[in-house]
Image (cartoon, rainbow, N blue to C red; front, side, top):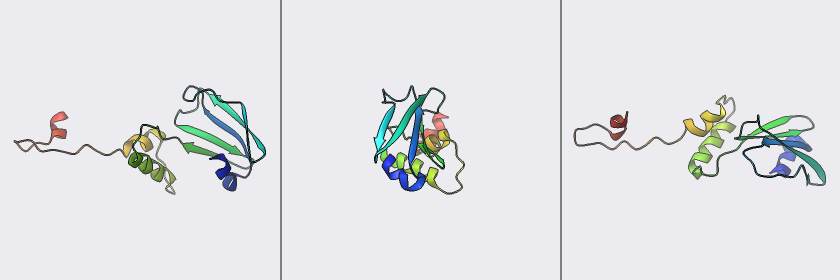
Length: 115
């Protein structure tokens, strides 16, 4: 992934992540002959990774592995849309499919009954 971001950021210098959301990580890795420093922070949102280049910073949304492929695609497509201002939680939950409304014998939907 980092090698693919070189075209956008130039040389990737640092990557930060949520310390409690990720397992043990080395402090440095080498990508394309360049050293990239890795740093974990407890204050960073667990669903983001920050990639820092020489000229800019890019925050990437991390879709939870238990998300369905459809939900993951929807969240990433929405996040990548120009002008999108949704927050992280909105991206990961607001576009989840709504339950199918099955009608009961008296005409009410199950969703309405649950409310």
